Length: 515
View (cartoon, helix red, strand yellow):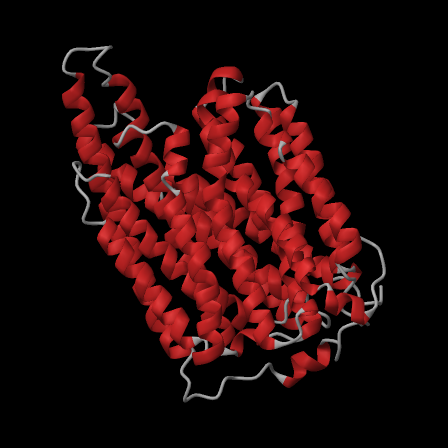
């Protein structure tokens, strides 16, 4: 991705550029879920422990979350298309290493490398869209398509992973990334124009280090809290340290001459409201998908591939409603699709929370379709609003902030939904059972008499816990709806980006042909 394009060439090829960016986004989003279906295989072939399996998944999330802000700042300074190309190359290297690992530790390390690549890819895709699509209406439509691909990737992962494992070895779930990355790199060389923030000052190294430390600590604390206990000394200590690092980052950035993230931007209620909306949307989506995937396999008895296929209706709803949300934002303003979307997500969660142990696939898929439709309505409008409120020269950091809110919402969703469900399950089944998967294995009628009754009791206990977790999620989303409704009030003049922030940022973006 280094070929120089003229301004006219960049404009005429902008929709092809979007295709490359969506392909780049798809490969890293799919990787967040594709590995889940292979966990039993890793346990068998690599002799991975329960903790090892957790970190095969979470190593990717941890490095991804920790480096987003730094990656966005580097992209603004050194070139967004360069950051995208470098991220793709690192992601491919990590994928190749993962395919040839022999131990759990090696696989965890390779997954961490993939997360580093993903941290550079995701904000670069969104910031390049902002630079290429200068017309607001077209940009909103492009972000709608970007959002649809992002949501679609979450559902494609289990289906693709299940199919690959049914036909090939487990290394195929990593090797499949290589041809996709190759296409994105080659096409990007011809179609992705150069853009960066001109005249930027030196890189905020201290702020960058503090942001990495703070978000590493915060993400690690959230990931470990369900296992260690939310009120354990370890969790409270890690949480306090993370909050202290985050506070130090805020203080440093407020006093820095050239801050990586000017905090005065968040005086803008529309920017803050958009960030909160994105956080609660992904909090709900990740939590309910985490629970539903287990319900499909352990309660309803579907294979990993069959469970993945049954997630496609909700993914289709998200893909269909994302352009609708973008079009609605164009016609009626941001407030309408964001509040309607949050309301739909709340309604879908409330429907999900009425499930019982005898509920079938129809109940869950209807609830998930409503949740996904709401996400499709709200996400493009909220994302577009957050990017619109930022100076153009801060597109990279702004994209990273947007992606950080998504990621933190996702991590919190899995941790909180999973923790509530596990607590209720343990209370009903006893701590000796451990998990739903363990209960299913122990209650197999082929292994012991009365196994069917154990399975029934475990299913009821898990669904009851899931109901309570999802109900709590609905309350959180409803609170986010109230905040978003106030933040996007049409009668209120949106707070502008503070003048001093604009003065700190460059007044224009380099032409698409510049390097």
